[in-house]
Structures are given as structure tokens and as C-alpha cells.
Length: 336
Ligand SMILES: [Zn+2]
Ligand SMILES: [Zn+2]
Image 1 (tube, rainbow, N blue to C red):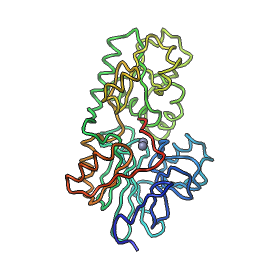
Image 2 (cartoon, helix red, strand yellow):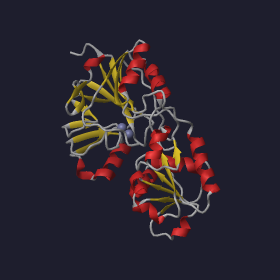
Image 3 (tube, protein in one colour):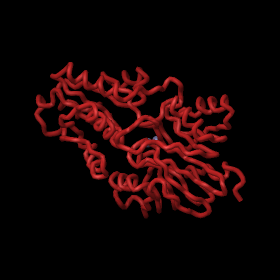
Image 4 (cartoon, rainbow, N blue to C red):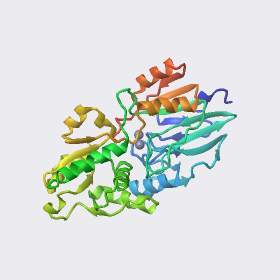
């Protein structure tokens, strides 16, 4: 018998569990049945017998892990209600990366929403975040400290292009996460008028091709490998951050090492990683975005996970919202 919204979800060793539906959400270990918010590795792990996710997330998970990584994949388009056990489940866009969704669970007039990762800033590569009124809101808090305020992306893209123009003999090598960040950066460069081929590290090829096949145009892309070193002068190259730290980067002429991450707000982080041009570009809500979203849901109870839980819980308390941190085992810092 469900009496309170907090009965809709509980924490088990495998992860967040919804007893009335009998499903886990983004479990950290393989389970019988899981709902997956999006295909980033810390939310989508192989091995579960059955997963339910948006068609885009299923497609991305299939490309990342191989079709055999999950016993069964079931797709559910955003906005379509589905009865699972005693619950009505709905996926709602979270604005994080292509296919990313919040999970709304309703039983007997009570509603819980699990945000997954989300952002409120516009992103040409995915559907925008939709706030859902609820009684219990489970929010991420990757950048849950007031120091984290992400500037508008247009300004960061303009800084990158200005740097390329000012140093035409050098290549600009931007460290990006392969799912989401790479494609958003490319799409924003196109909006800013950058129409040259953008050079890609091989690790980014598959997901860029998949985005295009799912209807996200990225313009001309070309491999970074097998090109004359001198020909890379004045070009923008995207690669995983790890590739820029090793010998792979030596193929580029006097590269300007750039990084596109919410963590670049902290200057020390940029210096540690040897980043010459830090770009504060994040696929997560910043502090203002987290606070505004919590208020918009109207939730009386908030559970905070994935990041700086304590600060956001404290803020909730000052607003008269009942909040607690949710310590999900097996999590590490968001690589974004
Ligand atoms: Zn994510
Ligand atoms: Zn995450």
C-alpha cells in the first residue's frame, strides 16, 4: 500500500528501486529489469536482463556496448505512459544528451520524478528539459555548489573561434566526452558559422555517425589521423581528454590544448590537466539551474545524488523543502 511519495522509491545495493513497478533506475549492478535515463557509462551499465529506455538511448547503448550487452531492450518514447506493475511510468526529456530522459512514476495520485542528468541551457542536439510537477524529486547535483555557474555557450564558442583565428599556425585540440559533448560542440560551432571540416579522433566517429542517423546534422567531419601535420594548422580537432594527454596529440602542429567541461570553472583543474584554453561548457545544470528546477517541480521532498549533495540539501532546507542525500554506492565523479 503506497501512502507517501517516498514509498515510490527506495535505495537497494543495486541502486535506486521502484517497488510498485519492480524496476531499478540506472542500477550500478546487473538486475532483472531496469529503466535507463541515458547512455552515459555511470548510468547505463551492461549486463541487465531487460532495459527500458528512449529509442535514442537504446540505439546509443547498442552502439557503445554491442547488442548483446542487455538481454532485452524495450523502447519507450517520451511522453507515452506505460503501466509497469502498479505504476504508470513516463519518460520526459531531460535536456542532457540525445535520448536522455527523466523518469516520472505515478501510483495512486502520488508522483516521483528521477531526473537522471539534466541541464536547462539550450542544446541543438537534444530535446529541451521539461519540468514535471511532482511530490518527490530525485535530482542530480554534479555542479551543486554556488561557485558553479555556466556562462552562455555562445561566448565560449566565440572564444574558441577567436583563438583559432589569432593563431593560424597551430591546431586547436578540444578534449570532449564522446557522447553528447562532442556533438553539441560541433552543432554550436556550425551555428556560430564555422563551416570547415571538423577533425575527429577515431573514438568519436561512431557516436557522431549515430547522431546524424538519428537526425542531428553535424556538417563536414574528417578524421584527424592520416593527415599531414602541417595541414592541421588552423583546424579544430576534437578528441577524448585522455588522448590529448598522451602521444596521440603529437601528430598536431603546436596544439592549443582546450577542454570543454563544467569543471573548467575551477582554474586549478584546467592547470592540472595542462589546458591552455579552458571552455566552461557543461551538459549539467549549474547551481542556479538546480535550484530553479527544484522549485519548479514543487516537490515537498527532494533526494540529492550524483555530486555535491550536502550543499544542495542545505539550500533545500532553507527553502523549507525536506531534502536528503542519496549515497549510491559505486559512483565516481562525473567525467563531463
Ligand atoms: Zn550523463
Ligand atoms: Zn551522470
